[in-house]
Length: 222
Image (tube, rainbow, N blue to C red; front, side):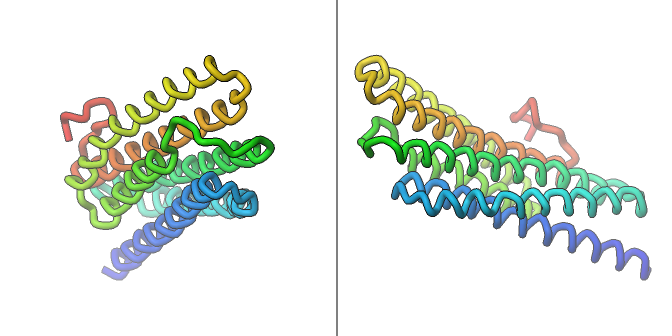
């Protein structure tokens, strides 16, 4: 019994570390979008400075999970939980990478005039961030139904990214002098679409943990 209690505490510690990771990556995305909105390059620097801490925490969480797999040989739902943590951890680190990519593009845009572009980056960012938040809430609560609702939002993010691509490509053709700003905004939209993809991956991992179902290539199975 004491061994089981200790193992459960280790699982709780692992979950707590992952939630710290989640908070750091969410903050990074929020900062990168605020930098885009305000063109405040000091916020970009905050995103860059946070990246090494996110990377260190990713390695720490992976090691904790691998130690549990090696020492405890968990079965069934506990095994699925640990495997899901490993995968969610990787997706969160990549969300942090997308934040850095966005900050890089915002910094490049700072060399050019700030113009109105035919794309609502903050709206796209809001939806992608909401997907991340909801997928993490599903993880916290072990709620597969909530995770499934995240999967349905991915199409909306994809459609917004496609619309941004069309609008900005058209602008580049019609006004070549605005190519630098348009191209950077196009890449930022693509980065946000990738954030939505990572949120979808997290949601799928929650469903795998809770239901034991792999829905990565078959959303209808959720």
